[in-house]
Image 1 (cartoon, rainbow, N blue to C red):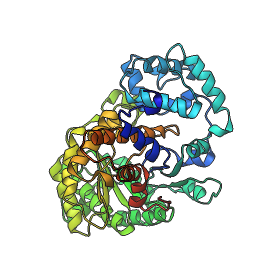
Image 2 (cartoon, rainbow, N blue to C red; image 1 turned 120 degrees about the vertical axis):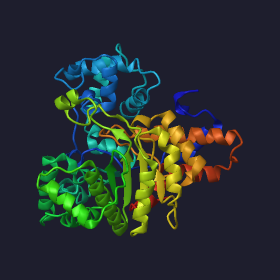
Image 3 (tube, rainbow, N blue to C red; image 1 turned 45 degrees about the vertical axis):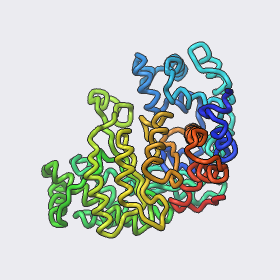
Amino acid sequence: MDDRDFLLSTATGEELFHTYAEGLPIVDYHCHISPQEIWEDRRYGNICQVWLGGDHYKWRLMRANGVDERYITGDAPDREKFQKWAETLTRCVGNPVYEWSHLELKRYFGYEGVLNASTAQEVWDLTSAKLADPSMSCRNLVARSNVRLICTTDDPADDFGWHRKLAADDSFGVKVVPAMRPDAALRIERGEESRAYLGRISEAAGMPVTSFAELCAAISARYDVAHELGCRASDHALDYVMFEPATADEVEAVFARAAAGEPVTGVEVLQYKTALMEFLASEYVRLGWVMQLHFGCKRDNNRRMFAKLGPDTGYDCVSDHTPADQLADFLDAVDENGGLPKTILYSLNPNDNVVIDTVMGCFQEGPVAGKMQNGSAWWFNDNECGMREQLTALANEGVLGTFVGMLTDSRSFLSYPRHEYFRRVLCGLVGEWVEAGKYPRDMGALGSIVSDISYGNAVRYFGFDLPVA
């Protein structure tokens, strides 16, 4: 089998991918790329800047291969860092980063070989020459990847200046819209950092924030601005979905103590976060936005390296504290008090797939198909096994055909082949089910399912102003 049919083990899977999924546009509804870099149309000097500049997936692998930190996040020359990466990649048999890396080299640079220690100079020279061409700028990379829309990750206290510029720029055919991530507003336990954020959101909204009610009003005002710029989704990074209800007076008292620099208890922190998440969910109903909840991650575990490098540098892990009862109780409380918004649940713990599928089944309702979603296999599960497990669990417990599909969750402008990877896994898995006799070989129905999961469902679910065939 040649590379054309990578991950496709059946004739049905091959036909589904090549006929129905391969050429579809991309809606990247959750990522971490910079709107500033898109506006400025950033150019890269070499492959190290593109690949290793902020990719903690690769950093973790290099550390596991015994590479000194100087060649990872330190001051070593880019060419030497790339050599260490090439030496590491050679040993990563079975790792999705190996597969993604070669897909990216092939799709963007036309490289048909294998990156290893002996070919590193060849790849360096080829990619350096290609990156020197204006066609490899950020905007051109996005456009040639067949991307139609990008949702960046933004705080409601941001000024949205880059988004305003992009919205007014008719020369770029890809929509770039904000997605709200108000995590800083939730982190009441962080003392001085939390109090500083109250000043930021107050300034951005142009109103005082001296109470919990005023904080909610300020966020609501900033959400209105984001909505005008095309925002249709939020995103929350939670340790777990908590549910610790409290009265309005109790929440105001917790806010007042924290804002005054007084200590708050663990239970009080959970009461505050529960109340704010309930308010935010009501905002998403008001605005018609999708609420995305990412949870099941224990972050910044290596305190020594956190002190040296800061967050998002490769020191997070899966958490097994993801209580289903609190998740269900939170959704129930929101549903009772104004209704649930469209919601996507992502757990970093793969053991939660069936839990999520069964919890969300309790809150599905029309007229939205798949109102509650089990989000695409995320982060450490973003591989063939993780994708197949997530897709299989969703198929077993729900309606796979309503799934909104893949996202990059990336900081790199070369990450779009992850959508190809996902589509290959999807078509390969469905093809196996068909050829095992589990579903008729009705290519019209199957093609519709595959194309909807790859593109159409996300457009309809988020309400993006994009054509759907």
